[in-house]
Amino acid sequence: KNQVEQSPQSLIILEGKNCTLQCNYTVSPFSNLRWYKQDTGRGPVSLTIMTFSENTKSNGRYTATLDADTKQSSLHITASQLSDSASYICVVRLSGGYNKLIFGAGTRLAVHP
Amino acid sequence: SQTIHQWPATLVQPVGSPLSLECTVEGTSNPNLYWYRQAAGRGLQLLFYSVGIGQISSEVPQNLSASRPQDRQFILSSKKLLLSDSGFYLCASSWTIAGGPQETQYFGPGTRLLVL
Image (tube, rainbow over the protein chains, first blue to last red):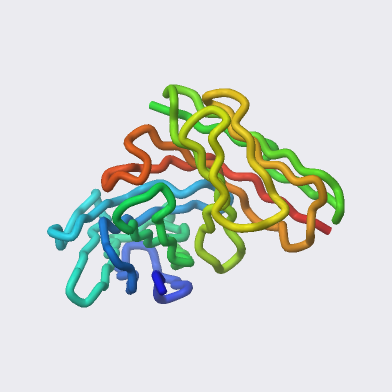
């Protein structure tokens, strides 16, 4: 069964600290993996996309990694800011078809001053 | 760049009442359009997608329906709402090859529906 599991479910950190969010997937055939940021009550916004051959991708203070062998990805946030408070969703695309996105349930991050 | 509008932003409806949620897209033509539902603590679930006017594909059996009367308009409807229809409904749009490896879906602000 194609699944995307994220951990932790929720996380609280202090402003300025770093954190790492995890994503494990059992999806085949794999096409790519994205991390989305979703502010409360808003639609998700894409942060990074990685294909099978890429093992790291950065977008400002966000760095995503991908280990296609172990089927794991992580999203590392450096020097967190209050505006980083949001849900972070890992999404894996299967090859082929219109309906081949598998969404994780997300990690809810709260950054406190 | 494209902009996705959804309304209403929030909606409280009684069980058994009808539903109509609207999504419109600006800044692109012939987009691929999607309706998703996000339940609390769950991943997004694809409900419908459309690659053109009048072309609707359904992903899960349910009491919801979708229509695309115009190129950049996507409507989610129900004749009789159920309690289980409560959730956060997101419209998404893309303009690259639907299902292609580099397809990026852009999401609207969402509609929060509470069925009582």
